[in-house]
Amino acid sequence: MPKRYITIHTLNDAQQRVIEVVEDIFEPGDICLLSGELGEEFCRVVMVMPVPAQDDQKLELAPLRKATEEDMERLRLIREREREARRFCLQCVEARGLEMKLVDVHLAPDGSKLIFFYTADDRVDFRDLVKDLASAFRIRIEMRQIGVRDEARKIGGLGLCLRPLCCATFLDEFVPITMQMAKDQNLTLSPNKISGICGRLMCCLAYEQEVYLKVRETMPSEGTTVIYKDKNYTVKSLLAFNKQLVLENDEGGEITVSSDDVTPASEAPDLTEHTTE
Image 1 (cartoon, one colour):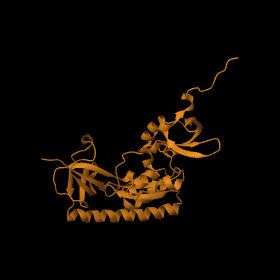
Image 2 (cartoon, helix red, strand yellow; image 1 turned 60 degrees about the horizontal axis):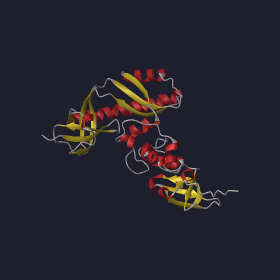
Image 3 (cartoon, rainbow, N blue to C red; image 1 turned 30 degrees about the vertical axis):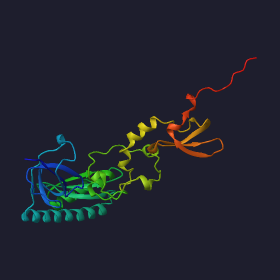
Image 4 (tube, rainbow, N blue to C red; image 1 turned 120 degrees about the vertical axis):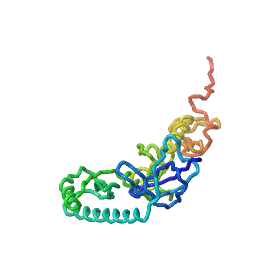
């Protein structure tokens, strides 16, 4: 029997995952239940594929079933309870003057606890808040502080490219992103142009960084002197994507040439004429 693969995301998280299924009964948009440690969790089918989008070794045969009418009624009750918990928590946060932002509220699939996700610049003493929540809902309360990138991953949305956020689709982990990456790729350094909706530098700056660094290793560095058509120029900047250099002469004039057409001054033959007395 040929393998079948579908892309899903849980209704409590925008991040997608690819799983292998046995039955060929799923269609995009279907609400299903996926078995986990805390019971069955609701999820939505995003895509049905004949082949996996990633290595077979990373895929598991996941126990997945379509939601029934009874399941959808249970989902409605879960969502209602989560909305109620969110409203009450926001009221308590405001009343106690806590410096925190409530991002989301999840009721565990097995109904054992309410999980409150929040962001904060500093440490928050929420002990009294937890007492308020536990007293109101008579259930275990868990507070989870997340970063702004995790907030974007959880909420989802569109990036500057008008595609779904990478963190909410295929990224498994966040890697450090630096301004040097934008400089290496000759991108604008305007924060509005290279920052995501989370306010941090865009994750996609890391995708081609290794390629740019390898190309730049074969090119003269900025500030060095090179020979082009028997004249000295200073390398002002590198256009690594096109393997081109922006050169500046002594008068301040600029030209753009292929890096293959220049010779580093240190490698140029010594043409100085020597005379004898």
